[in-house]
Image (cartoon, rainbow, N blue to C red; front, top):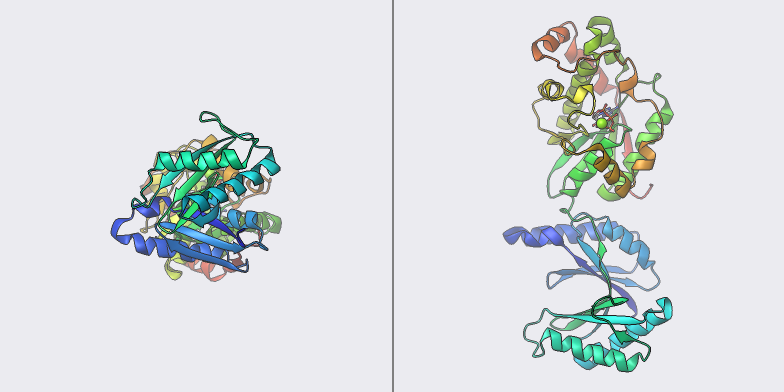
Length: 396
Ligand code: ATP
Ligand code: MG
């Protein structure tokens, strides 16, 4: 029947954008095209408030659905069959569709859910449902109607020139198309939280670049490979991006030698922020993004966050700030980073960990401790020794 597979993509929030809707829709179509570039014979077009993907039957449609569902801005996807908007033809297509489901899944009951986007169509939705339902009962003798718990809810969406028939909606992540909200620099550790934080900001349309701090040779190359692996999983949503790897050891050594032990953690965090701010400025990133979460550890008490925040002037986004750990872990599972995050490798923060880190640091005291260090030279040296790693989408 159809030479091509057809997917209907619904745009969710993009559809609410009023005057800016055409811009967001164009961005979304561009992102879907980019995500599907590796498949041949795929066409993506906007039409009547929906996005249609047509793919040659030789292409793996399940893979195409998976790739599309990862594009931010996509609310849901349906695999559909297309027929002319004329009830006999639509009925025939519906019968063929149901015969295939009977053969594949042994379907026994169904219900037709008809919808009429074309209000010029003289037949009203319930009537369309009854007509198509009757045709299915004649064409598929084994089927019965069940309006309460049918095996299949068959959607018949009558539009101006075409009618689309589909069974279910596959959920996307929603959000807004990448590139509609600037670029942010995520401080990416190997933990559970920061990949989730990056995902959440990217889902709102923000392009991502990353910085990772290590303490080589105290931390191993394998620990950094784990972070690169996490970055590749992120890239399957956010597209390719760059990761700046910074050796923090010289900074940590200076802090340990010159400052009170209990302040080590908070001082290290302020240096991370300032180095990140420098990298952000040099790479067009408007904000920093961290996986910080109120009260999670000593460095994330309210007082510690205030002191950390005071180290930089650009905005720091903390999308996980008020979430419970269990919910962050669920999110990590959902986006596929959890298994990698829980691999046990040392992090630079665990090197020189103080026995009793201060949980209520005071800014004046921290500034006094920092005055014993040549902060500017340390930051400069760390940034100029950076290693840049290209994280490629599609390598995960
Ligand atoms: P995660 O928050 O990713 O699970 P974590 O909880 O061990 O790791 P914390 O020590 O609580 O991390 O640090 C809070 C935030 O600081 C992290 O979410 C991350 O954004 C940033 N951060 C910590 N360590 C690093 C690092 N080695 N490189 C880059 N950013 C880091
Ligand atoms: Mg954390």
